[in-house]
Length: 429
Image 1: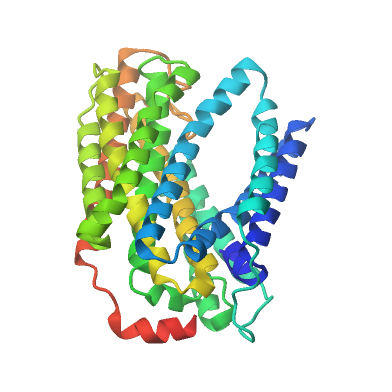
Image 2: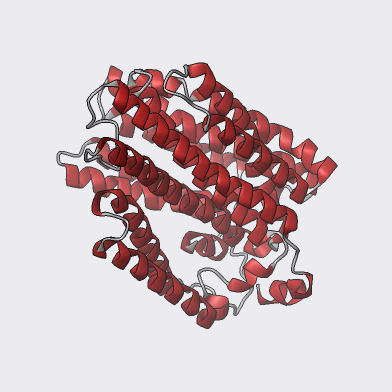
């Protein structure tokens, strides 16, 4: 979100180019690293670069395609590319590691960054600051950034550590309490900052922003957590290698792209609210089917989940993003894009942490054996009991994710736009 505000301040193309340069340079440094600490530092630099890359993408789309129908089509392509890239990246990375070495996973980014920078200079028009004069231009809300980052990091840590330390242990309860304090302090700080806030709270009063952002966060919670769990299931239960498991998640990416590309027509017919609800309904049905997995189930059962969930996720990704970007004034499109991206990342991080914790808890309770929250099946001996325990954990995570998407669907249907606040919220922005 800090990068989103910076995008509106220094210009979209400039922020995009800076993010590409930082990401590419960090990736090259990671490729030549000689110690784990340098690899971790390189990954941090790549993350910071990605944070600068993402907000300008939707901001550029909004500025180039101002007509709603064209913008919907452009956002559909953006959502399809994002979903396909996110899900095929690990597969391609795994192939590079198997054929060459782990360093290839870093080197491959460098030519992609260079090519993208050249195309950006040729195709994307330069933009100046889109922030109105005298509105806190040039100031960065560092305190807000630190409070939000520390609060979310603490929350994710507590969720990951819960199966190992115990959900009611003192460190875990302290972590949850500290996260609540930090995130509450973040909200209070943002209220005091007003127009200079990293996340102006007036933005959330615009019709569609809160609804679209919440839908994207909860969808990411369900889908990224499920991707984490089913990858372990493919390897630990069905016996595929990491490369084979990665290939068998590709139907999910293909279905997501198909759902994204079909979304503009559905948006034109049903509108944003009904389109988001329809996509969430499909995802919920997919998780209900996944919850029926048994120890003897074959890959085709998982394939059914991937196709249905991917189609629904594609609809929600496009419709939710269009809802957010269509509600934000063009001068603050960078911030609107940042909210859209940040909610996805927060949902994904919590989804992996919490669903991984649910899986670990079920496996540990059934087998009375310690399980790592990162790979609960890895430390377990291959046996029918371990297979059944993992499948029970899988169904528990499916029920958890399905309950989240069902609640999101009902909330979208019942959500009422806050019409009385629209004028004041736009003026605040």
